[in-house]
Length: 338
Ligand code: 13P
Image 1 (cartoon, rainbow, N blue to C red):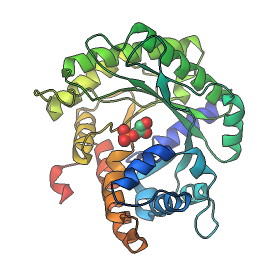
Image 2: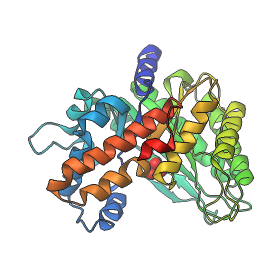
Image 3: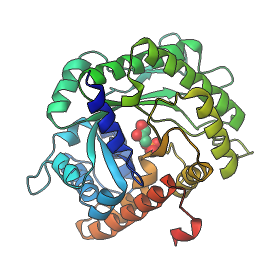
């Protein structure tokens, strides 16, 4: 393992005022997104949409440090034949790749999932490295009920995350480890805190067991928020304080950066929460974003599947990227949303 090379990649991904664009929707998920704008999902329309994002020069150069791709996209070329990965490299963003093969039902545990994809992963990582990937993502899915996630679910998922992370580092690829505690449900913010703490504690035990070099890894967590159907929604300051309190207790200071998922939060709330945490500051890790929906909802809608809307879609993307870039510095304000 070349520790210095891994640390250098992680630092580039955590550049000041920048964050990660999660554009790694599976074919099934991107179809759902395209359905919402009445656009047929084909290999070409998916390429056109993502090319539009990666050619949004202002957003990509100023506020995006890395892009998570799906297997199809890392192999695709722009309409003019330029590899899509080259577009992001030219804009100064690191190409990354989603390598898990999805969350499947966990045997014997109704309502719980385990993320798969370890079989053949060493070989796939070598190929992705050849294709230009310098970081990867693996997402575990943890649903909250009064009794779930079970210990079995936490152990299975965090063990897989650690095996994945070790294989990534062997291949010269920085692992983003993502134990996503899902927002859906009627649970309280305190219950989200409890489950997220348990997940992060289990994760860092497993990463330690597998000898993962934390300085060459990045955490992608949920924020500590109230369940979506809980009547008592925690406010922005409470979310920020509880999230930071949880991380101070559970995330080793050797971890260089934490990049949040948006998880179904509205665009502006995802920005406001990140900003509130960075305004508190005094943190041992960089705190940034790795948003999918909270970066793409606005440009997706503006694009609407039409080539003539590309400039408007790129402007919408640039705005969200800029707002989130400011939030990584604790310099966002609602008045900037216009
Ligand atoms: P969202 O920001 O839409 O939650 O997606 C981030 C992601 O990559 C989930 O794995």
